[in-house]
Length: 68
Image (tube, rainbow, N blue to C red; front, side, top):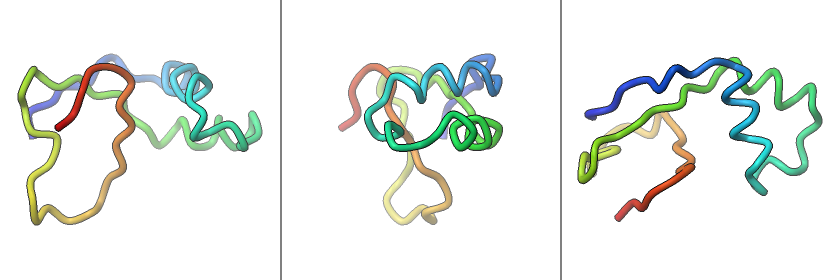
């Protein structure tokens, strides 16, 4: 995986999550707890996010761009 951290902090993660319908049902407290476990990553164009056969140890939410 070719990614780098994008200055992720719990407040940046919380701000990103608050814009997504996926997290609409969570309370502010739940979002706050979850935000401490997230990292915002930036991938180079055409860089793989994961490969076929990789263990399912992460969940990715695309905030911008496209994934094929």
